Image (cartoon, rainbow, N blue to C red):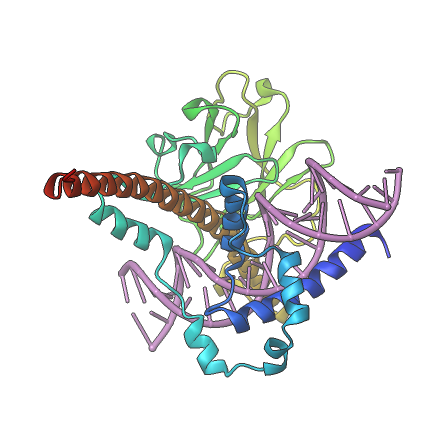
Length: 311
DNA sequence: CTTGGCCTCCGTCAATTTAC
DNA sequence: GTAAATTGACGGAGGCCAAG
């Protein structure tokens, strides 16, 4: 077994042991990623672990046989224990409404996320996708495709493409499915009507049917695909035009890909919010500690005043 | 250099909450 | 009631560090 394979094997078994043990010992068990970030924070901030490390928990699992022998927890009870709390955004916004000093979690991505902040000034995108090379594609209503490079700042990194055949898009059609690298090294984004948006290496060859790109930004053409679709990419199709089971399967696959893509982005955003939430809580703790210290000092002062020592 | 432990990040699934 | 959004849980991948 390779190093990596053995590591994963051990890790998996350890995880199973630890999760069972923790869930039987604590109310609600360990929330994985919170434990990740918080245990790391505890270590760096205080040098102590209030949350046990995996190795420590493994020791607990070995020594505490009762926890293991208890075995199955009643699923209803378990569900009640594991019942979800409100979202980070909601919790934090409630806190912020009570405590003016606590910032609210923003609805939009923060600037550090790389999305150009003034992208909305170009047009209101209905969908934003990120390609495999990190570029952003925003689909605005009316068929305008905006492509931006994450490295560039603001509008400079944006290009607007207006599809000549946009018109009224077929109902149910998904606009951009995937980005890939063609055989000639150009980049392709798949769009409706069995066409692709191809990154052109020579900007002077930009055709007239697309908006002119500025500066040394790459240009894009809308044309028929030169290569077969990569594995896993399914072209958009109107539900009304589905006939065969194969097409239905393709539609299902397309929907799944879209759902996974959205969930991927949602998970990223959720983790970002969670980090922000933890940061806010930490800063609040710091503020409260200072306040507490001041109040204790004040109390001591008042005590001295009210009951002066008589020598 | 190899190995083991730990950590972070990510993608995915599924349960739950929220918005309409 | 339902679709969409949110988030806990899980497991894989890879990096870092210390010990052997």
